[in-house]
Amino acid sequence: MKKLFILSISIVLLAGCARHPKNDVLAEVDHEKIYREDLQRAFAQQKENYGMDLLNDPLGNFTVKRNLMNGLIEEKLLLSVVHEKGISLTSEEKELIKSQLESGYNEGDLRKILSSQKMTPEDWLKQQEEKQMVDKAIDQELKAQLVLKPGEVEDYYKKHASLFREPDGVRCRHIVVTKEEKAKTILSLLKKGENFANVARQYSESPDREQDGDLGLLNQNSDFPSVFKETCLTLKTGQTSEIVSSEYGYHIFRAIEKKEGHQLTLPEAKGKIEAFIRQERRPELLATWLETLHQTKKIHVDEERLKEVRLSPL
Image 1 (cartoon, rainbow, N blue to C red):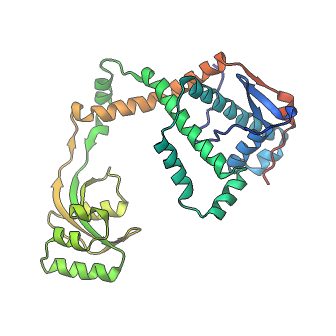
Image 2: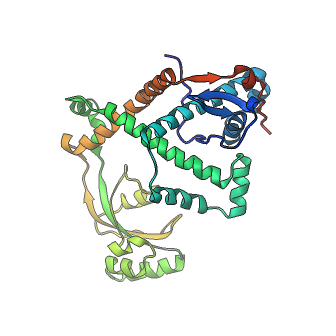
Image 3: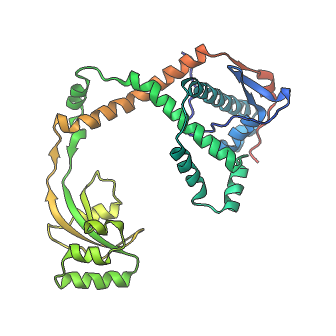
């Protein structure tokens, strides 16, 4: 099996749609053309991955072009599957993509960033929509191949039992505010015996104040900031922390209940095990599928025109 250059699916998924001179066509995939502009755009979005020495060396420059071209070919192959399967996005999915574009940057900065990647906001939206449709196509194609064999989950559990042990944990509440002086006032109230849940509901500035500041169970594997875990796991049941700062503000924690670590049973671990196995198997299945697409689709690359393209790091 030839080695495939498999780029992550977050790379450029954008085909040129304007009119191009005939000699700008670098490759065709099932009658879908890849233009010089597509290659230059792909390079603009990834040029930080390549050093000056590599790009200034003729052989290195061609290697980069070949890798980019392989990626563009695979994009076309995957998009052909999208079209064959009639995959599309819902209006809600499109709106979510649009909202991602509009958040985080003002219009001037956004256009400047996209311009450096040879893109317009419209190009970016098209790219992200195609990316999501390709993700759907991959999920549909691989889902049937990711069927687990009888006994596979049990075997995995026996061989990797240590992965399915829950460490000691603690259920905690917290109060968070943006001003340190306010945190000091709240801590004073708590030291005088005020009910923590009531104070959290009244003064905390975090949305979880509606749940009395309840963070749920924290342990070393929890997806919480390290300062949360470092503080809560050292508290005794009923103990209140001093003021602790984080990127979110000033916190006061209280331990509600300690939980001893335990080994997950097979039924408890089954969902995690299935996810692990599928994740391990997915890259190989994807590579095999892409190889099949390479063999069944008509692909032509104009090697001479590809050699003529120069990629400049500037």
